[in-house]
Length: 201
Ligand SMILES: NC(=O)c1ccc[n+]([C@@H]2O[C@H](COP(=O)([O-])OP(=O)(O)OC[C@H]3O[C@@H](n4cnc5c(N)ncnc54)[C@H](OP(=O)(O)O)[C@@H]3O)[C@@H](O)[C@H]2O)c1
Image 1 (tube, helix red, strand yellow):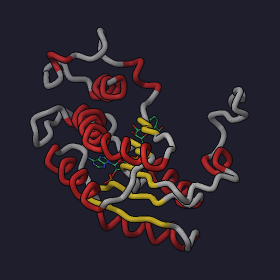
Image 2: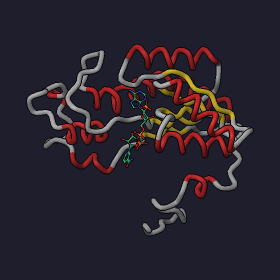
Image 3: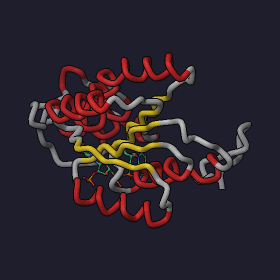
């Protein structure tokens, strides 16, 4: 069990524990990669506290199952899903455009989706896949949604939050940190260093 910090919580605290007693019914959040792992739990607990959660997902079939599972436990949950493939610039742009067209406010953006340790692959935009998915996709998404978040903050008078789910693995990037000139260098590619690099970014 990790040591508790000033907040009273630690890395052993659960999402339910840290949000206990919070009424977040006025808030809207996007959670990327909400079909598995941390993303599902984040979506579930935000929905439990009343947040309207938009799951940004590349697999709509799994998303439907996840949504149904959460609704079984929390019948009042406000949950929707929209297609989003973070490795594709076109998909990110379409998602942002669809979200903006929906007219929904945006208080919280959780950039969670990620891939880990994949063999060298280029995305459809010719960017090494881990860098494209974990960093570039979320970077673009955040930028495209920033005005909506600012507008929401202005209208609701509540500060927004952008959460980037990183990793302590960021320390294990290539020597020198982010190899801006060698992102797509297959000959020196290390799947673990490339993951770490994307998390450092
Ligand atoms: N688990 C750990 O120990 C750990 C530690 C440090 C950091 N993290 C970080 O925490 C985050 C979540 O990890 P996790 O363990 O919950 O992983 P996970 O169970 O593998 O879930 C990853 C999620 O990301 C989605 N995803 C992957 N590529 C995508 C893409 N191109 N477009 C849209 N969605 C995509 C997956 O969708 P599909 O279902 O379609 O594959 C899935 O929903 C990641 O950013 C990871 O790097 C995890």
